[in-house]
Every structure is written in C-alpha cells, then in structure tokens.
Length: 177
Image 1 (cartoon, helix red, strand yellow):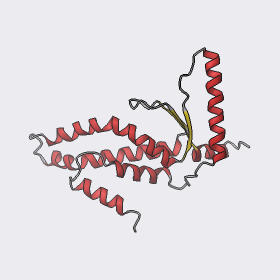
Image 2: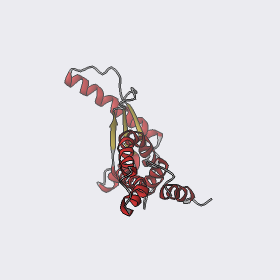
Image 3: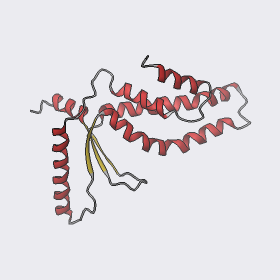
Image 4: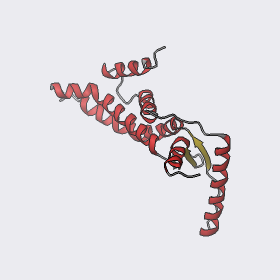
C-alpha cells in the first residue's frame, strides 16, 4: 500500500470541501513526516525511562524540601518518541484550535461571501489551517526536549515528557559522555 494514500485522501477531502474543519489525521501525518525528515525517531530504552523517572522523583523531593510545598500527586515521567509527542499534543491543539477554525469557516460561509476570493478561501481555509498546524507540530516535535503537561481541563495528573531522539541528538552535539 502506498504510504501517501492516506495523505492524498485527506487532502482530496479537504480540497473538495468535504470537511469543514481541520483534518487532525492529516495534521498528525504531516507533523510526523516533518519531525522525522532526515532523522530517525529513536524509541527510548527501558533504562532511559527508568533513569528519567528516578531523576524526576529526586527533583520533586528537592523542590518540595526547598519550597516547603507538599506534592499531593507526583507527575508521571515519560520518555517518548517524536511521534508520541505529536500524538500527546494533538489533543491540546484540537481543544485550542477547533473553536477558532469553526469561526473562520462560518465567517466564509456567510451569504455575503459570493465573490470568487471568498469562495476560494471558504474551500481551502480548513486545508491551509491543517497544513499550518501540521508543520508547526512537526517542527516543534523535531526540536523540543521535554514538556510539562498540566492535563487541563481533563483532570488527569500532570505528565512530564522527555523526547528521546532530541535529547540523544543534543547529547551528541554537545559531546556529553
């Protein structure tokens, strides 16, 4: 099966106006392609995961002792791939961007939008927004070292992500033994 088939299908649906909002599947596919262009998305080892969990616990204890604040719930530490980081962040981007995208699309669909430019923008604005978000997420995934996710408004405990391939790349670049 052609690896571009799903991308082509999503682009076709967006360009024909079959989708009114962002194609999150296309965002994900594009972000993964951008994030991994020219590099491998190394999976973290179990040793690396264990080391980071221990470091996070130690830092939480040190922080608690220094600030005299008690942690009621420790954050979970996860060493992840770029693709995992993208998937974790799409949920947040979706919550942030969907309402805005809906307003943009609704504005272009108003009856006053009869001129050719407005009609064209009506058809392609979801596609353009999809491409922009995919490119931004891909670029960020290729460069981000880690992230603290508050998990708002979902009520889950906080998560600390460490992006293994980017940390390993930085380690090589800085020649850390």
